[in-house]
Length: 178
Image (tube, rainbow, N blue to C red; front, side):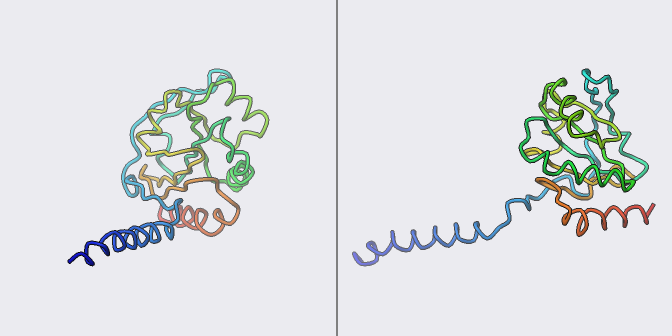
């Protein structure tokens, strides 16, 4: 009986190693979103007062498939994905942006510096809409179908490879269904 008690910590340790080992095989970018195949949460956000933009509401994301990108001037990865967003917009896909927990003057200066690929830009100063969207950090991008339902969530920057292999085919499929 004493030997079994001696082995108990060893089994517990081996069990913990197995649990952590399995957890390390998971891709942290593949966080499930509760919004997939559900309507985009309702919101109406102001624009960036510093640049005079009008902002937008959930209704702007209905009628055709679109990308909704969460960005910020303080985001380290946002400049990395910005050329891809510019390319996406140049290819004719509507891209909407939400400046998340950013000062309007900082977000406006950032867009002036890097260019503005967005059809419309809104400001989520308090971060309330981002909470409703389940945003964990910037950048994050959602693909919204013509009915206003979330069809995909990209956590982290969009690379050219992700655009070509995942996002563009999905948007093309959603356009064909229209």
